[in-house]
Image 1 (cartoon, rainbow, N blue to C red):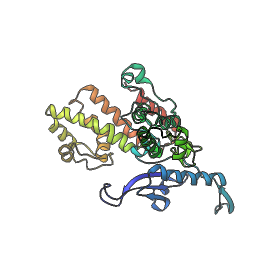
Image 2 (cartoon, helix red, strand yellow):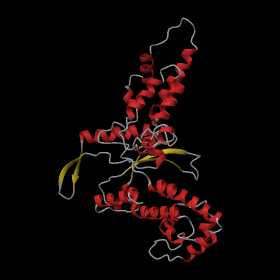
Image 3 (cartoon, rainbow, N blue to C red):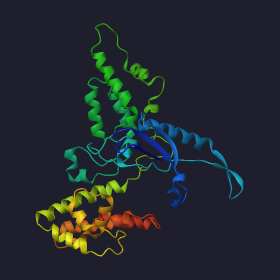
Length: 352
């Protein structure tokens, strides 16, 4: 399943809407890339992404429980299909919303694991090493809803969101309504009875259960949304780690008046085997602050050969690790997963 915000205009500032597409992951990759293998599911300029995803979840769950009868043309017999959600594709901001994550500014800033803590705790050795613990997302969301019923709910909900790193857009409307209702109750006339908290919540839910208004992916059978939203390496690696490390390296070269030497080396570099015959040394150095993914992908593989005597050794070492990592991540097919994971772990954790 793929979901993202798009626009028919040049800028998403106008006519922005959310779309959902679906593909059969059991098909070969060369077929999945074809347009006719990508099926349109839903689109709306008004519904929030989690409202669209609830419809997708209900459809997949119903089809999985009842089965879909079809004809197998290869074996010439009737078969029953049971679809299930393998993973949810999208960019990092959409993945954060699908995981009910509040973003990088939270104390717990990762949507996949529970790495984090208070700012003071994260600066300690124990806090820095505390990673990969089970997320209690549903419990935290329900706690935020219950907190919105308490006096001073606005501040408490904001604090709970920041401390847990969890924010569910599916029940934003409920929380805002309860907070506004709480403000109105504070101003109610003397002697006018107030509804008990439980009745207030039931009125807002309009006969539905609280689980019906929580992120539908959190309790979907067979789905762990924190693990089944694979990171988009274009934004995470090339436009993340590589981009900002490139900025720091260029700053060092510019400060030492070595940028012209770097440009000359880049221009004279052999392009054989790079699958990128035009690195464009003049363009890269002139517009060093406005490069895109394809530039960073090529630079990551050649930087150690260009800056070996121009930057400190720790910077050179970092570029060597980045170059190996980029090559390892851009595998379109993994024949031996265990061997691949060993190589990746040794590169990330064992390189000194």
